[in-house]
Length: 448
Image 1 (cartoon, one colour):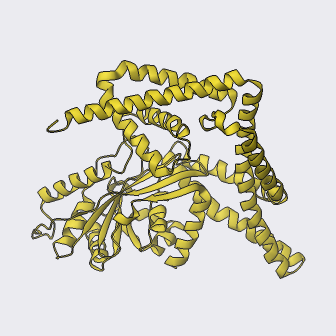
Image 2: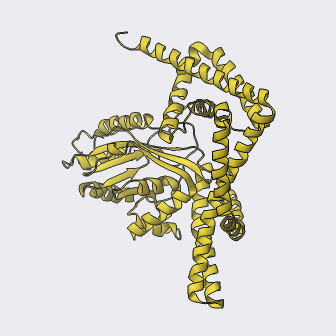
Image 3: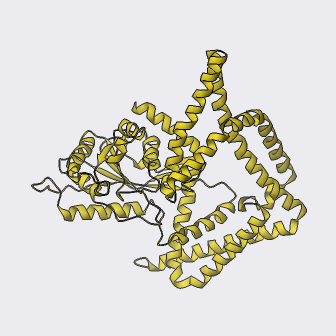
């Protein structure tokens, strides 16, 4: 059951996200007990990602009400989840003693336990204060002589509520748990618990993107898009994450000494983005080097052939799935309301129900009216149509953007070149600020 659920969720997540990437996979121990601690930005999507992107079986703690919910309860049990009893759920928190015993038993068996020490998913720009449960579980297991490793891991989404966005799972440097003698109540001393919790928080800080205000994260995202666009290559997620993290940290350091310069840069970014929006192009496409005649003809021919080949399948797929797509979209907005942490979860769960139901209904209808082989063929055609429509419209959207950029380059060359020059000027300013940040850090380093 667990293997089937893992395969199904892996397929579902690969469809929902345009790109999934794991960084630092080698830092997760290949064997032996380990506690993976993660930030918690996106409700049930977070445990689904860790369970499908890690090869070793992973157990995790989940709030007790999930075990009583239809469908979800079966899924969390399939992944060997352990219930946590919380005050806000009006549960008997005394039962958490059994929860801790089960968690330590997973570690005693050499398994991996994944925990979200913030306790709840949220949309804050920085980590919430950590609960002590992860430290208490790890110290309790280590007291029995187990060599427990704690591995901090960060989840990063380019847009966690949007279909076909991107997600990154980053593993930080693991560290061992120093055993502490348990008290008569079989609990570790509070001093050791708080010290280990602080160490976990420092580990999470290395693999998560945090700022005091959301505006700082937004500015770093805008700056990163310019730097990545000017790099001449499509940056992978780990590089984009690292770049945004350095930009946020740089703002915090340089803001005290170079505030006016940063403010001018932010205004310049705003003007540049407005000009891009009016032109209907992205910063990646504002590059004269992309519009050499041979390059344009080659890309245009490949794109046209791709779109023509997929067009019949895409039309069929769009017609079949458009009503369900709109239903899932409306349902997720209504159920998640203003809670962005639940948006992707609701979309995934709704898709899990409605799309297979549609495929099954089409198969049954064709089977009853024609034959069962025809029913199986109808189901296969519907699934293939969904994949074809997805691939077609993503490439089509890119082609429209590229066509706008080509038109700007061909018919409004001066405007195009001004945008290209401004992009490079902003990129140079960002690089200069990065060099200044590095210089300040070197001067502040011990022994400098």
